Image 1 (tube, rainbow, N blue to C red):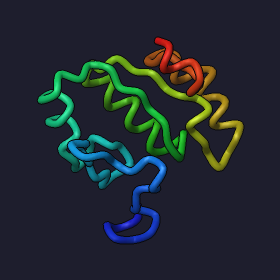
Image 2 (image 1 turned 90 degrees about the vertical axis):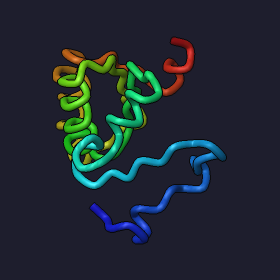
Image 3 (image 1 turned 120 degrees about the vertical axis):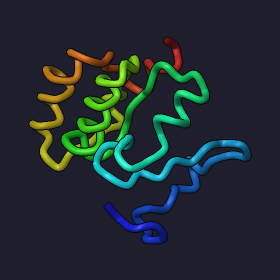
Image 4 (image 1 turned 30 degrees about the horizontal axis):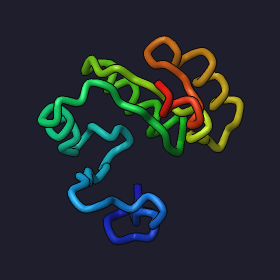
Length: 112
């Protein structure tokens, strides 16, 4: 995990937050661990999460498992996730994640 202020921790301009957007800093492998994500989501009546990220076997897996334990509905954008091991990525998307999440592509997601 890159510390605050390091290039890897910077937000890419193409997806930069707009005025009024909420930013939650991820401090551990799961986006929930050590952050105020749960408080922000519950305060805004969020019940479904759409996950994307790197690495599929790290952040995405850890966040998905913890979110499922917290009873969130889950969708994973398969083409917006990546892993250094393509086989691991495939197994997670095809066999593990579908037990707790709907697997979609980015093109399919906005239509649901």
